[in-house]
Length: 96
Length: 318
Length: 102
Image (cartoon, rainbow over all chains, first blue to last red; front, top):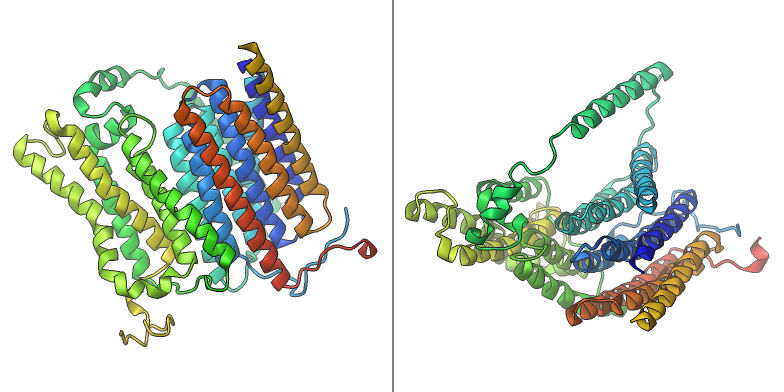
């Protein structure tokens, strides 16, 4: 049963990497932060699954710290880190 | 087989993120990649079964440093790096040099003797060190002198940053942002309790003053983002006291032990646990305040307390 | 107990499915507001299911409490940050995607 956790962590990591690669090509600024949020949420899950697979005790604490500081990062971005979009006008999105 | 696959993907991701972070002329995206890379590094530390380092990396290496760099970026006028044109030959030569360096370092790392050099002695002395977490024992007992100097370096960092600029006085208006206020109200207590928890279990599980301090700093950053900076001038004394407390307590205890047992940072074995706890508690507060002060970006003394403007000319306090 | 293991496995699989769906949505959705939904809702459900699967295998009650705390924290953080980002984007004039805009 515990042999399933490492492949699960791999699947998550793969999904994250593909998401990272594809989203980071977009020029819009707000989307870039979504990538960081995605990395944080997925990272929490990957850490926990890895901890279970490898028998790392206290991986849970690392995941908790992850989650808490992802909140800090999100607020830091919105309040004091969101540069204006380069083109100077409203970001237009097109359906992919 | 699966482990090798996971490792390969992780390593490729980290390297790719690092490369794109450096190569992207859009600095904002580069910062985001840097943050993502920090998160992946924390995953790598867990993969290497080092939760202490993973804790520190997740807290400081990605979140706090990321917030710090984002704030720095926000203060810059433009956010595109100047693109330097490298000639093809120079790029090729540099690339080759980097590969050679990588090969040399890799060969050196692979030829290191198998771990076990001091492990036996370190674990053997654990019962006498006052704690049961070998990492904490190494940091605060066996190599306590190093940690003392590191705490001093942190204080120096704050002094350096403070001498460069005045504090940032922005921050959201919580009256008009009830969602942000709710987030702060809910998350700040969790941060403080988690920081205390990490401090306490640092004696026997991954954790300790540094990780706890990083969580406290996260709380400090949140408070600053909620507008605490405007009211900081009134608490400047307390802030400075807190910043210095860690170093003072640590140096005091270290010097004290010199008199009692004849060694710098040589705790008497019976009470080693309590001295370590005392030092870690003071260090927790200091580290939290230090990292938050770095985010503050400058000394609070130059504030005009009435209007909250950052004009260094107006030093009139209430 | 194999029953608990089976339930845990099923929850884990469901959690992975939500994660993949959320990440795919993040890539494919047409504008910032929709992508916020993907990241903060689908991924959180995936995380919750994964945490539940792990909680069933936890070693101690304290671990279960910590796992629950992780989920609560991530929920609070995601919900608030989602709102803050969307609000700020709206304030800056980012217009939602509408079908006529393709």
